[in-house]
Image 1: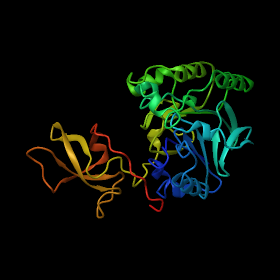
Image 2 (image 1 turned 120 degrees about the vertical axis):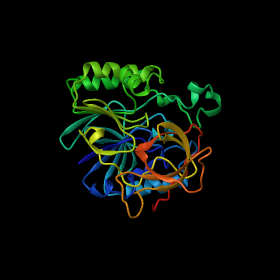
Image 3 (image 1 turned 135 degrees about the horizontal axis):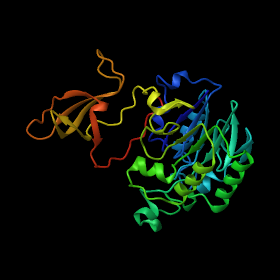
Image 4 (image 1 turned 30 degrees about the vertical axis):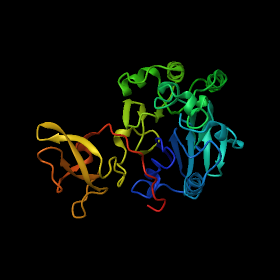
Length: 323
């Protein structure tokens, strides 16, 4: 079976691949495809100890990990891995069971065809933030945008296949659908416009992307995936919730409802599977509201009752590999 999931950002979001109620069903004959922002080829100097540890961990899992590139990859290093022919297309072999699906390639896996096309524009660094000189070659690379040659190769490859594939795997979406998902926050760019063309000429069963850090069914056959692992062909809304992967952490400020009014609250405690005597199908949190009602003892709410995290940025901590 083939599964689809979203960005893992190196160690930041790899926790969804740890042992849980979904991954325990994945067998040695299965594949997990990551829709970009793999992030375990990131250090601009060389492979560091953290990357080595987690790449070894991935390579030792039952399944084979496949990924398209996103915008958060160290492209000079990624492109230096050996190129091999695999299931009808070219891959970079990062590890024997960790393969980068190269741009514009079409693969046949378990009787279905997959068009892979990584790349996207960064909105958190580089030209979008005016700090290109500070980050170029260290945490931002211009190769995040596919070249004209890569786009031309992709279109010719699709044409050779009659402009018809079963599945499309990308990091970002066509311009129109990107606008829908991000409510106009991400302007059109070279990559999203290229995917507009692909969407207009290619017949496909389903299109999956990452990039937007949400789980959304955009159309009847197009989904954005982030914190879910779903069998290929399935919409996000039908995916199992991965037990034990909370979005929020102790000490964070979140927005939720206090009666009929939205209010800020602090997370006092996280229960990934709900309280011991009251198991839940989603993480639960003990929170206390700021203001006159602030208390060291809070109330329990489900993750779905939290509207959003506050805008205060906190760097993600590395997850324990044995977690």
